[in-house]
Structures are given as C-alpha cells and as structure tokens.
Length: 183
Image (cartoon, rainbow, N blue to C red; front, side, top):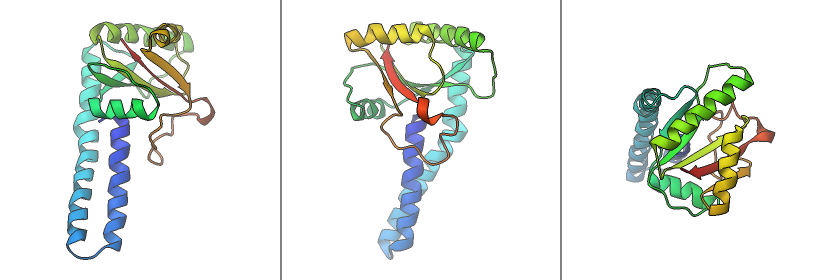
C-alpha cells in the first residue's frame, strides 16, 4: 500500500462521500459501500500495515529507516507516471523514523548503515523515496552509478501522485527530491 496507496484511499473516500451527498437511489448505496471499503483500507494502513512494517524493519536491524512494502502494480504505476521504466522483484518505500533526533553526522552514519543492510537483504528490489532530508554520499554514489545503467534516478520535486492535505507536514517544499534505486 505505502503512503501513496493510503493517500489514494483517502482521496477516494472523501470524493465518494461527497458523491453520496449528491446522488440518490441505489447508486448512493453502491457508492457508500465503496467508500466504506476505502475507509477499511485506511484503517488497515494505520492498524496493521504500518505497525507491521515498523516491526519488520526493526527485526531486520534497521535503526533509522522503515521499509513500507509496496504492491508491484502501484510501484510500476508510480514509476511510469514519473517517466521511468524499470523491472524489479519487490518494491518498498523508504521512510525515516519519526521522533528520533540525531546530530547530522550520526544521522548520516545510521542512515548509510541501514541502507547497506537493506541493499544486501532485498536484492533486485526497487526502493522509492521522497524526502527533503539530506541524502548520504553513499546514496548519491549509488544513484550516480545506477543512473548510468538505468537502475536509479533522483529528481527534484515530489512524486507525481497527489498527496492528501496535511499528510506532508515533514517535507520542506523547496527542497523535496524523489528517486528510486534497484539494489
């Protein structure tokens, strides 16, 4: 599902609820049922999916990042909307854990060590990110090497999928970059 899947569920839920207000008859019941499915998807994200991803990341030995598994179709769609065509086995969104404050040097060391663990643990997988945080030299080198082979990219701006309002509070608008790399 990832955060983009969550955002899609949120957009669909609120759009369908608004449509329910405008439509009468049997169509209203059908639209409301689909809206309830979207609400269940949102509930699943916050009660099962996200806590499970945090636990799996902790069990992998990751200190700084959380890997959110993505559906392969959603990952391909995100990459194609961005103009990229790559083949991969698994797909993950890379997220930085919230609430942990570190000095920049410590942050970069922990982040780099986590990415090394992930790279070895998930060969052939694509890792997608969107951040305004500084990227370690290790990541920039991997992107440079991978972009020559068509296995990585880094672009300015956010991913081409619309975010739901108030879900992007930790991104600084002017410095957002997004990218992907296949390990």
